[in-house]
View (cartoon, rainbow, N blue to C red):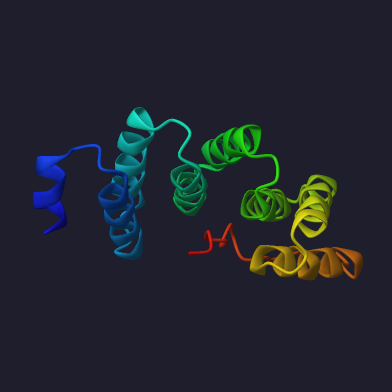
Length: 145
């Protein structure tokens, strides 16, 4: 059904987002990224697509791409709590503790009661008590619906 809808309107954002989500759930991040990039060609400022593309790229091992797309979202929407959380998680997983701390501190400042704000606060507590290794959910934030 989604494929048929896409044939009628190839750049339909809700269909492309849903297809990307299904591809990601099926373990096909390259196909998910393709749908998101198609969407972003017609809607370069689509915040949900940018957030999801950063997450998909991270999940596929493309850390530079994940950072690039997450920062691109933050340029458009500096108060995006989910993007700040994701940025912190990416940095933390790379061992970039100060960068993670800055991103998570911003997420908590902007949205302490949001899911991403709470995750960021937990990440900050983990950083404070950290001895050597840190493992955080890799850019797991999804936009609230």
